[in-house]
Amino acid sequence: MAKAKSKKPAKAARTRAAAAAPVELNVPSDFLDVLIDKAHEFQVKVEVVEPDPGSNPSDEDMREVLEDYSDDPVHEELHEMLADLNQDQLADLVALVWLGRGDFTVSEWAEKRAEALRLDPRRTPDYLIETPQLADYLEEGLAALRR
Image 1 (cartoon, rainbow, N blue to C red):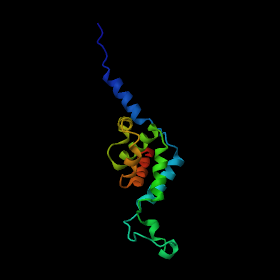
Image 2 (image 1 turned 135 degrees about the vertical axis):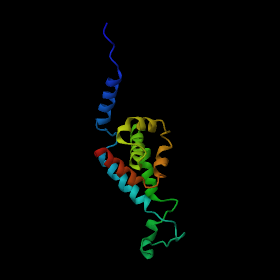
Image 3 (image 1 turned 90 degrees about the vertical axis):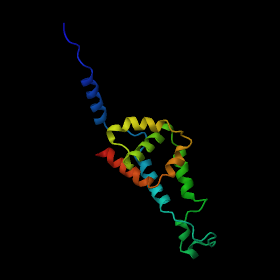
Image 4 (image 1 turned 180 degrees about the vertical axis):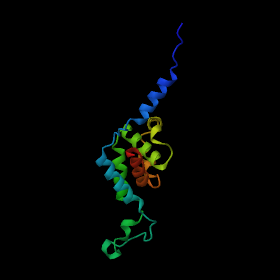
């Protein structure tokens, strides 16, 4: 009587193959470029020094552009960009941030992306915007995927 073959080697081979497969993002690369630029623009904001700036920005050397006012148009643009994405795209961004932050390796992408899919998509834009170093983490995550 022949001995039954173990299924473990086949499962391990599938796992290695899945880990070696390139990650396909649902977010277009040109959108990612704009998002990263916008996130950099948002993250250079500093505390408000002049609560009531002059009516002519050139009189103040345009300093208020870098100050973090509550009606910041950069924040609004960033939020609109993210709110327009679907749940799959938001999950890609969250997983990319986590990867760029060093929370996991590329071989764990599918598992962590599935975890990101479980987040409430209505709150995900705020979660991303409130992530310190968002732009840097997105860049690091993309670099990790390209290695």
